[in-house]
View 1: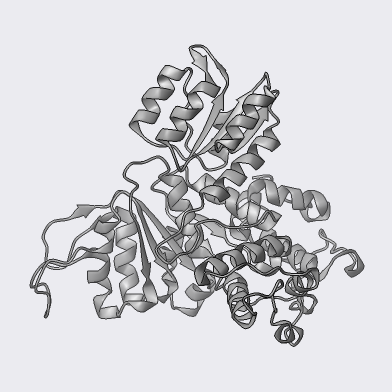
View 2: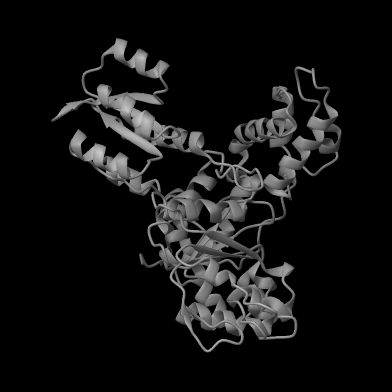
Length: 448
């Protein structure tokens, strides 16, 4: 049961039936999280705790026992035990414990960012569930959709980490910001080049595809790739073969390609700026990263997390955010999403005296910004006799938009629920929950 839960949460479980097997495993590699039972066939988990903590000093250790011994629990907690769970084990408690452990294990990137998405809102939860499902297939292409500043690069890094958890050494994560590469250099940047392949090529150049071999190649803002070069990317994605400029040798890519865009690929295709066949090749698994205005419950914990991060960056004590400040943050639309929230907190922190107990939030600027309730008008969708829209008094502005968007997508997909869920960035179960809330949307739909 625990192995299944760990897989569902994006982890890679290794199960040991006794201490002998566990010793072999921890001598071979370190683990991020260790779930340790107490009474084992060949010894005590409590006694084995010290060895694990020595071999995995940065890991999280969770003790599970059917015979709680308070004195031992207190002693281990003082020595760094992360959590202590008793049998019969509540699965919700175990999942919550894993989520806390994941936050503890959040690691800084080269830019100092933390590789974790903070929040427990349903919108973020749906996206994280899809990411964990995608992590099970190490070579499947993934398309990340979302507005600027929602954290698509962070989602790609999480997908990479969950996919290759436990690998030693961990395969490389290689990002490419597509708009930043000149068109004439794009092919050499992606596939590499041999010495003398073009003017100025005085040595062999390793392409990003080769550098990401066995790992993840992240193509950020993929819609910015010039149209003539999209054919080359399409051929690479279809065959997984690449040839450096000036070389007669063809290489085979064994890794994952993750692409991201803040635009609608369908609209780009209709506009003539993106190849339709490339759209289908990229959109194997699409995951929508929700904007911050759809994650209002996450704002308090996210703001607290970002503020702590900023205080560590500037070497300052952390001031508090009062409830009025949190309410102001939750009432703003944040068109720049998490990136804008971080910028606002950083600007406010630098305006706050270092010995001040509370943050001097730039609240005046927020007062002049559009509030959440001034959301765009609902999408206009032609009504059909079989589907009656609820009375406007029954839905909030955001619910009305969601209702109409689901209605429109289901109609365009001929009622296919799984395809509609994929287009909407929802799981199949998440869309079914919404159809249970609005049963009139199911009129005449098939159940595929």
